[in-house]
Length: 274
Image 1 (cartoon, one colour):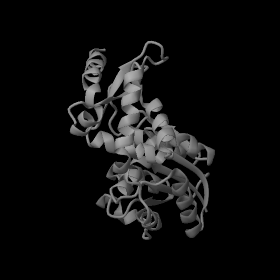
Image 2: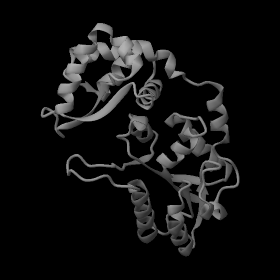
Image 3: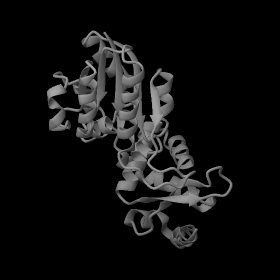
């Protein structure tokens, strides 16, 4: 049987993250192909949907595309068109594309594999079945909406992933002091801290891979050590970029800054006015 897979990546990623597992794209792809082999289907096409502007998905799109996965960058906000936030944007794009395949290429696939646990996809499940096609829901165990359960894969597809994630984990708190030193030096020297530049400097200065750096940055955001803002830069094509600021109200930041606190406060105040 020929299969087409549609992956609501943010839903799967969040479900695994809540279990303490932040997987690498390569590991996730391997799990997809192992699952396809286990149910004896030919995985012909894989579509994956996510907002790759998000911190946790940075650089993942290229990795997936190199593995022949068709990615759809579903933005939450379009800076070119100045749109408002689009809730459930990935869900809508996935459902539209799946229905387009049903209408234009109904004989191309025998089974539709939907990697999600979101109950909003129940209407799509009904449409696929109405066309006489098989459909399976593959989600993170314990994170699947009850409406989808009758169509769920019985095996725990991500069980081995969650087990492997538990064996070794990065502890970002151990890198906080050195990270602060790197970021303080950058904020003193640079007009503003572009998020990409910060990540690259942290990776180089800490000798950490980019996955660990992304986890570190998210940890610092969660703990209020750094703040995230949209910075206007007329030199950029889209005129806006994501930037970080040290949170000078944070006790760790105050201690690390020492005599540089007043200088950073002044620079932060100027950036906040822009």
